[in-house]
Length: 80
Image (cartoon, rainbow, N blue to C red; front, top):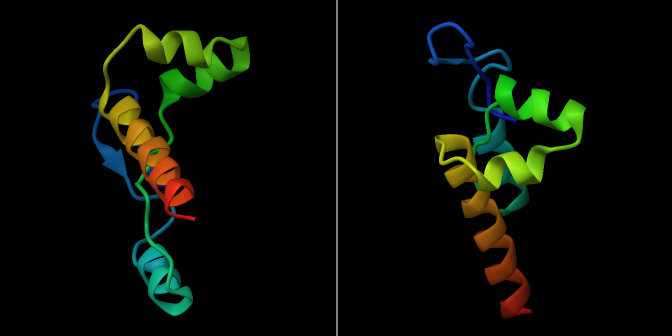
C-alpha cells in the first residue's frame, strides 16, 4: 500500500512514510510493480464483495495502477 487517498480532497496522504519500499527494492533486487494507495471507494467495494465489478465499471488512477501491477506480474511469469 502506498498512502491513503483523502476522501475529502482526493489528495494522497503518506501515512506509512517514504523511502522504505525503494530501499527494500534495492536491498533485495526486486522491482517495484506499482504504488497502490488505500482508496476509500475500493475499501467500501471490498466490504460489499463488489470490488472487481466496481473497478470494471469505472476508470480511476487506482484502477490504472492496479492494471499496471497485473501486467507486470503477467510479464514476469511469461519470462520464467
